[in-house]
Image 1 (tube, helix red, strand yellow):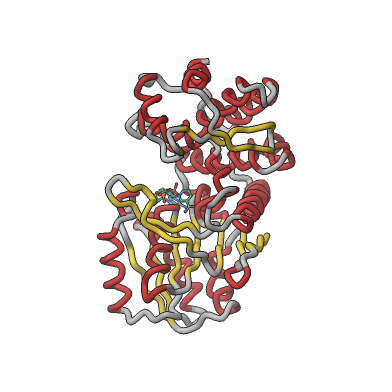
Image 2: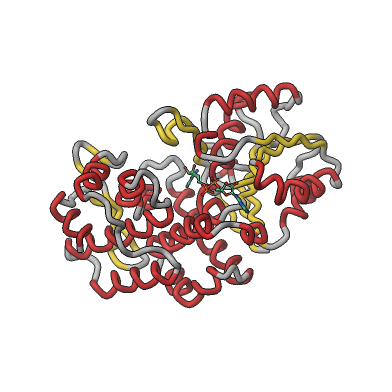
Length: 357
Ligand SMILES: NC(=O)c1ccc[n+]([C@@H]2O[C@H](COP(=O)([O-])OP(=O)(O)OC[C@H]3O[C@@H](n4cnc5c(N)ncnc54)[C@H](O)[C@@H]3O)[C@@H](O)[C@H]2O)c1
């Protein structure tokens, strides 16, 4: 097992990464001082696959466990679902010291985190991410959120977990699309987080793709370390944390202009490449580096070509992106591989050229 410490003063916590960790969770929770009862929030697929293993580990360590199940899907990040969960917690007589465990992907993590942050003004949260995206990204850093109408992820809080347990054996049951979403985020961290990770990724991407446990553990560890550093420097997303949006300005626009037919990971992959081209047009990143970026995206099994979308619709979607400040579109662009910068000096014509290149 590998560990990353997220250092945030009294809100510091460990991220544990390894195989078979679900079976050790009861013991680990006892070690950090929990006892008595706790609540697991999960979805039907994850419950079927991993619910019993986790529950057994907890009950054999003396915990009384309530398992709450919410249907799958982004639409569950809602005030309505939250309301039902508050009632369940209240019926169980959950107290301020009762930990809530998020067992699932980013949807369960964001929803459960929101519940933990708000129920009784805050109860302990443990993230147990089971998708690659959740293990490398969403379970780390304390952003918890619901959606409300057009406000995606806008009703929320910064609420750090007490512990993150990433059991890499759970990744074996993911679909190709869910794996792609995680791989795209890993490539993103390779570009924003230093040449070392990008080089490691170049040497090991095939192993990561085929879920080789050693390579997976190492890559999740390295990515978690980068995210932890960014969060430590800018917990509340005032400046540095924005770099985590690399690939997402164009990526979100592609998702939305395709009516979400293009998946998140695929859209971010194309977004990273287009944003690399924009940087090259600004005279910043070398063409060779953009080629290396394209190569790693392709080797990760992600697309490098923009699907046939109406250019005009895509441009409109970019303009509507949440990262527009005073009429200017804000981009995170690579300076070189391993290093990014933030700019709002990209002209619409340059964006168009980079899209059609
Ligand atoms: N809080 C953050 O910092 C942050 C960062 C990035 C994304 N997010 C959020 O994360 C969400 C997306 O998360 P996601 O990509 O994990 O999707 P998800 O949570 O919807 O999970 C995708 C599907 O995978 C299934 N699943 C989960 N683990 C599985 C496993 N081990 N085996 C088989 N199936 C499994 C789930 O049942 C679900 O159907 C979005 O809501 C997004 O806003 C949050």
